[in-house]
Length: 140
Image (cartoon, rainbow, N blue to C red; front, side, top):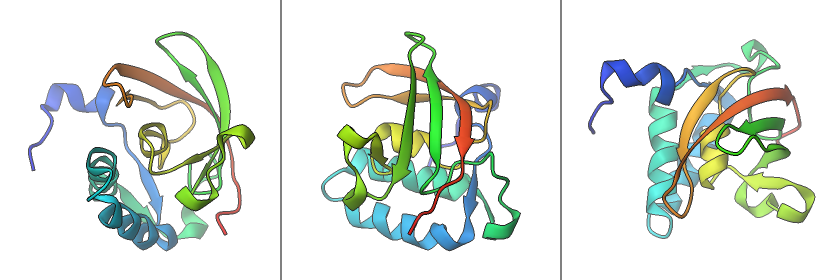
């Protein structure tokens, strides 16, 4: 796997923190999705590989985990949205529940309030989002 150049890492690859109890579930989900959603699945695997994995009790409430309600701003158009990050089977866009196995869901997992990340939409355009706020939720 290729590494990002050192000078681009702070902007495009902020530190992510993953709940140890969710790590295996997320990894299994990504591996299972490699055949039908290779790009997004590989991105999730890449995020998991570089993540700082911690026990649930040491995850700050400002970190996005499964079940979190997140408000983020798309820096490209200034639009702010609030969504809940969920597993694919719980996704429902009409209820603002987005799957961790989507480009935006994969970009959000493990980020903290105030962090920015570059992400690629399904149509291939590059965007940048900033996490405005996080409200912890229940992943189960």
